[in-house]
Image (tube, rainbow, N blue to C red; front, side, top):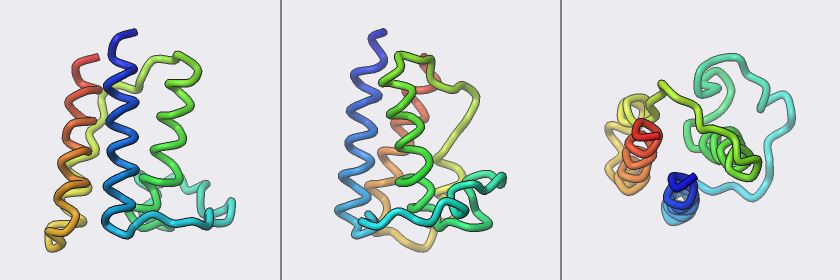
Length: 106
């Protein structure tokens, strides 16, 4: 699957940008924080926590399993909304936009 290499690079870029923005956490949240049924776990996690602890591990596992990537989702609109007054996160938004484009082209 040719889309796996670029998608993997995008996941790495997302992690890099989260770290550069000082949003990367070294301690994993308690299990119940990772079990929300709400989109983006918005009732429990901060947006960057969802990216680190939910999105990245799930996508990395799909790649490791050679499983198809999910279809029909967009990350960018939600993150643009929640970070609209935080221009320091623009690099993260750029990577999220690239992820959206990559998934749409699969």
